[in-house]
Amino acid sequence: MVLLDVKLDNFLLFNDFSMHLTYTKKPVSSSIAEEHLVGRPNFRYKKLIVLMGANATGKTALGKVLMGAFNFIAKREYALIADLIEDPQKDASFSLDMAFDDNYLYRVNAVFKGRKKSYSDIRSEDIYVDVKREKILKNDSYEKCVKRLSEKPSEHFDNYVQALESVPFITWKFELRLVDSSLQRVIEPFEPNIYAAMLEETLKALDPRIEQVKKIKDKGKDNTFIIDYKNHSVLIKDGVVMEADKLSSGTADGVGIADLITSIKLKANNFVYCDEKFSHVHSVAETAFLALMTDILEGNQQLFFTTHNTDVLDMNLPFHSFAFLRRDEIDDNKVTCIYASDYLKKNNQSLKNAVENDVFSTSPDTDSIYNLNKVFREAAKIVVQKEFNV
Image 1 (tube, rainbow, N blue to C red):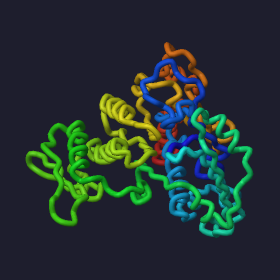
Image 2: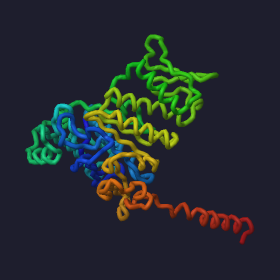
Image 3: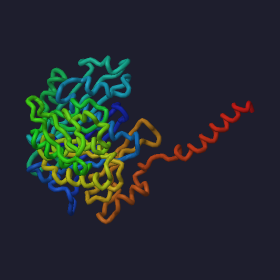
Image 4: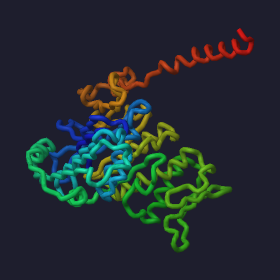
């Protein structure tokens, strides 16, 4: 499954939000191979989306909402998405265009009726789901196929569960902090020996002191591994580091990084969302890992990669792979998606220079930082006045 278009309203930061994930013009040359659906060369989609933006612009929140929507579609449990509704007094909705291996384009529209005291008051009768699908012909582009889809009448479903049952099974892998791990993936654990090898190479790249990573051979412990150092060992069980304080932050993050790489390489999941998993990793290592993940992406796979590392902007990636989230200057509760390819048209233009010159108006507001010294002086003045009863 690949994601082609996203519309969100009244979920977390996102009000009247849209994000488009296809492109029309075939690049003259691209470092990303076969960026189209398998067997459908004109149906172009963005295999890689590097998502950037200032803090609190919605990079992590977008992952949470997409994960909630996927869980709702796959498990038919509305609480998995309803608890992300920002204002229960208003209607909330999402619309996703997705393409599957069956060469059909699916559109899932879901509306959650508002006028509730809280999201927990929502009942199944408050939820309306509409699903359409259209065959993707051999020479179709997204634009041609979606035009036919939009003109089709809606199918009749008795309830939202029946509607969602018409959508093929979605597989996904999210790496999001402080989120229930059971919601972040929908696949069985990897083959242990393959995963142990991937884990070892990944962690050694981040910490050369590691001697080996091995799988515990005890029966019933296929998901338990040991990281061996010269003088101590660390246990990993079900993807969780048991004594994380014995690892550096970057090495601990390496467990999730290995999970992502293995997931892509084995095609365990077609959709992968990596949210700032490299914040404790050296920038050179981050760009190398991103280059690797991009290189091993195959047909009908897609990777979202959020980062603050501007060195990524110097990588040999097409402009259409970069998107920036920006809070609206007038309405602080509105987030907009900015596409680098809308501003940069020539291959010899520098994306990094554009970002450094704030062409996309996505740089953080630093006024409050520079005001800190003034605030400190004023606070100190008040302390002195109180102490001497001035």
